[in-house]
Length: 308
Image (cartoon, rainbow, N blue to C red):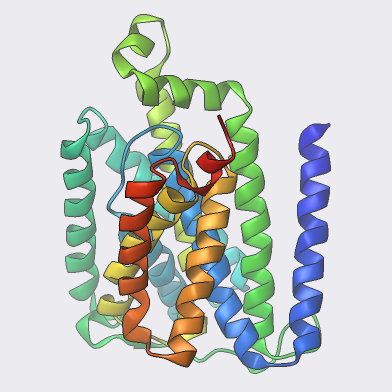
């Protein structure tokens, strides 16, 4: 019952946000809002594995780019509605996450993090040498002019799609936190050896976490080709995705579903404002300064300030 009330409340907030964006009547609101919502999904997805389970994943850009390049491949072969492409991209990224987890989750700590980074490098190398999706020269994707479901341009539709995905991702993260699955993740994060000795199926739970995390990241990346209209490996596997996705939960707080949302909205908004008013080159500088400040002053994040 509590989850149903939360979902209804989240849907109401989403409706208000979308209506407010349309009332503003400025196209840039949808461009900037899409990026912020994209980071809400990425940060929440990262937190399922990195925050709940305690396994720090540096391979965010790989799962994100897999979703994006799945859309490019489908666009060239069998054009499908964007929600279907997102679902396919999420499934492919989830399967890759499951495989990565099976191969690397026996590693712990720094060794696991290095393995995920190596996986991202391997994925980028494969995409760079895959001519069908553009290879190193990139690929162009022509987005439609109008939204297919309501009056407005296609950017508004992309904003709506990412807003819907944000609600779904946050609702799933919250449901996990208050479930037996979430308690199992917490046991692994606190003391994996003790969890194994207590009968917790640690490997199975970690595989679930990697599949869920990778799947949501892939779904977040699937609309990217329609948003940028030109996708190359350098932009799809950009370092900013990995840095932001880790920094946002750390600044917001990794022990709860709310922390990544707060961190993504705060950092994402600051970066968009800096891009318009000063320079886009300051994005990672802002992230770095805030991350250092919060690690020193509030290691448990913003949410940790208000919790004992």
